[in-house]
Image (tube, rainbow, N blue to C red; front, side, top):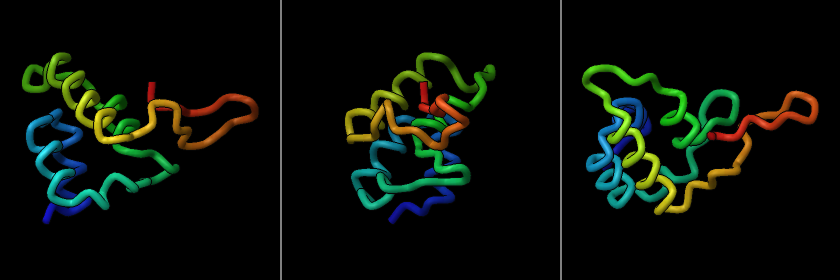
Length: 87
């Protein structure tokens, strides 16, 4: 069983294969909402690229999350009319 803490590390590291396996193993994690209401896609999109974390792996991680039903338009919070969506 994959924990929220472990999934957070995997998403931030763009470890898309492990993210897929973790969500298959623990589908209840799809309902995760972190600080400020962010979901896994918000966290993925907000994680910086590094020499060890490529743009290609970031996109693959986002694809895994979207394929499992994480909503690309789900807002984390609002500031006036502006909505904090993942992308």
